[in-house]
Image 1 (tube, rainbow, N blue to C red):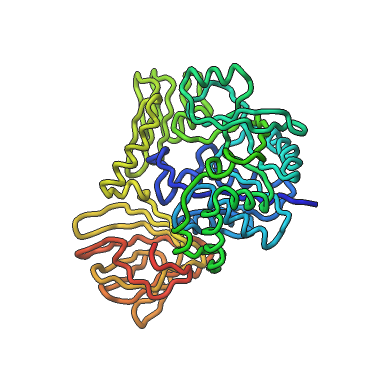
Image 2: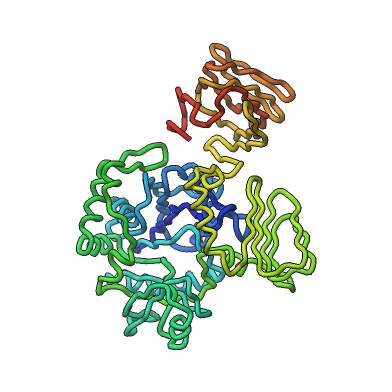
Length: 472
């Protein structure tokens, strides 16, 4: 029996949902519509299928987020492929295809984005049956979402002649249309939204990539040939991969090949590509308001209010998105949410930390929250997972004071090693080699007070690290 191998594309920096989404924690790793992250929702909807373990592709700097979210679901992936830099979907899928050919020459790759929402999972599963048949015949199958309205934010696929049961040849791909054109597409019934989900044989994908984009094909082969295994990750040959051109699967192959097929999908799909689409996906009250967190609304309508840490109140407003996080607040009209990306880009250009990370920063050993800072001091709330250990390190410019709030810390301080219990503290002088470890079975929580002339994260000299990190 030919089984499906899910390929989860978990790259991307998610600037369109700033400030909730940041470069180091983009939307695919956030619980936007429930208790699970979008990556976890993508993985759990595949559980009923006959499948091989998934292949996950992500940016190198997101590797521990991916590994942790897989661990929370007790999912052991076939591999986690690390891209040193994003090169769009055509190279990413090529890497997965090359990896799977080593294990299953007949592999069918089900390529999914990690940040899409599907409401009707049964309809999604049913759409895979005709797609599998077409894929086994050598077709490159894309899933076309049956449009529910004249959407201008998606590309479209025009179907051609019928092909098998419930499938069609692809007549053409079209870019995002204007409103009038989108209404014309909707009226014909021959157009679908381009979902960015695919099913095909790994070997057929590579054949077509070699035919139309041999430069991408060959660069990916070289990058995989020089790849190394690092813990549970596969690291590509960075120099070779950075020579690979960037291109999407649509432009590189599907718009050129004669083997493209489309299978209609009516399953409540959304790419949650903006705050307005997230508002549409969330439950709303009788006044059209979607709220999350501590929110008080008075005579306000058609709002989305997301409050993470403080009470947010609205009075007499409508059609707004209001997002509150620990370090940023966004207020934007629902008709202008596409411009949020420009705000994120401006923050990036100015070197502002709010573009790259939240106040809470996740590490493979746990998380820290910078709760206060001044000219020569910084205060962090640090949580270390049971059994985890921070790197053995030293600092040139700062000293650290640690107060244990909960749990027990094992501290390395120069030549000494000792335990620090709740309500006890210790001091790490400037230049002293040190490490912090949680030997217990409950999370270790400490308050760290840093003092010194420079408090940046780049003042860390790592001497030993069980997670293989040189930075981050």
